View 1 (tube, rainbow, N blue to C red):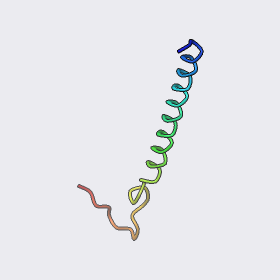
View 2: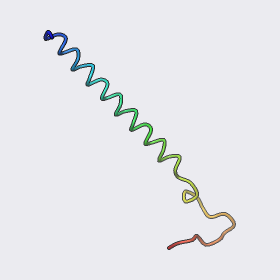
View 3: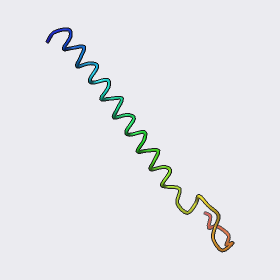
Length: 52
């Protein structure tokens, strides 16, 4: 492998890794936002919330 080919492969690997990391961070942020669920707002009907 020539030096140019090695450099190109290293750059491609770095770009691919960065893209994968960005995609995982984006997906995790969307998942956290969606997982707010019933604990994110007030209890309907004025009932006391269930606690342990």
